[in-house]
Amino acid sequence: MPFIAVDDESFDEIVEREFAKGHTVVLKFGSAYCDSCQVMEFELEELHDRVTKVSILDIDTGSCLGLLQRFEIEEVPTTLIFKDMESQLLYKNGVMLADDMIDIILRER
Figure: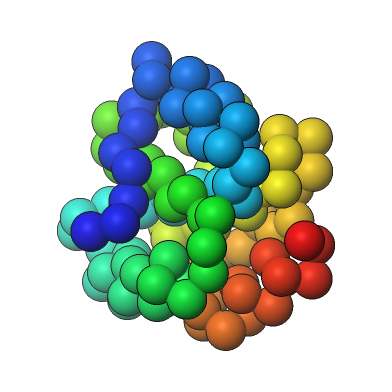
C-alpha cells in the first residue's frame, strides 16, 4: 500500500519530512475493523496513483489517541488534507471519492 504508517510519537517528524519534499499531506484516520475505512483506502490508493507529490499518512484510531484529540476526530473514516500545516484544505468524515480529493488538491497547486 502507498500509505505511511504513523503514530503519536512519529507524526510530527514524518509530516515535516513530507512537507519538506513539497508534498500535499493526506491524513487517513481509520480502523482495520471499519468497512467504510476499507472503501476509503481504495479511493486513497487511486488518489496516490493519479497525483504526484502526495503523501498519505495512515493513522490507526485504536492506537493514536493523542492524534485523535489533536485533530478532534470523532468518527471514522475521517480524511484531512493539508497543503502545509497552516493550510488545511479538507476535513471530511465518511467516504470521499478520489476524483473529489484530486480536484481539491490540484485546485490549490
